[in-house]
Length: 319
Image 1 (spheres, rainbow, N blue to C red):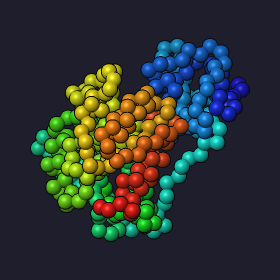
Image 2 (cartoon, helix red, strand yellow):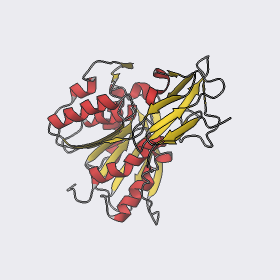
Image 3 (tube, rainbow, N blue to C red):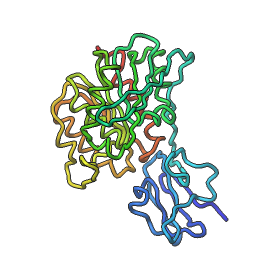
Image 4 (cartoon, rainbow, N blue to C red):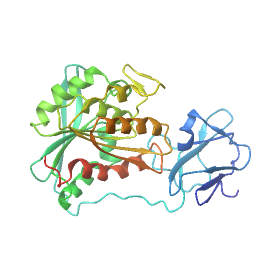
């Protein structure tokens, strides 16, 4: 069998392998809008892009490109494969020459959830000047390697030393959709132990990015937030809505802090994130916004960690 995908510049032509009935990927919101494929199908993709894709059989079951040599770096779907267009290059994060920080595992008993919650705490090699609360902490530790990136930037002198608390949900689909119990857990149970009166930041991706922005919107003046591809279609209580503008965007209030936003141009969350960025600008909030030529995945998000830390915690800022 010949190649399943041929890439020429920004164009990718997909040749259906045996058993393929549809094409899915970042460009279809995965299974939301599958593209029927009976013969060669050419798509125009963003220039210099990273794209993940797969196929569906006649029963709607996903399967991988049989000719792709390696899987995509996708922790959710083993059938995802990747292609690149143009001159795309991975924006590799910095690495610390000498590891000096420590990572401590801890537990906090939560009254609102009536259960112990796991967390991990990165302590910087110098006295922290801020504290960052990261949603989906295990993923940001293992896939994003965020503690290592922060350590490298601190050793470079690029950012202020920051304590990073990696939080892990039990039911992220509920907790991150503006659950008041989660707010109580963060502000009343985590921060008294780890905040220390320091400037406060929130971080997350997808639903975690939504939660980070929601918490930041209720935090003290001077707080900051980073959201990768925030799931802005989510409503409180576990549902999604497709009205414009989105619920959280309408709830934003003027805030003296800072926000950094990133989203992929192949995401269904592109337009909502653009509306959010416009709303933040209208409110006069100090912010930065970046669109990457990719989709809703960890290759996209991992590249945003170092720029986000530099923007929110740069040594040129007074903390």
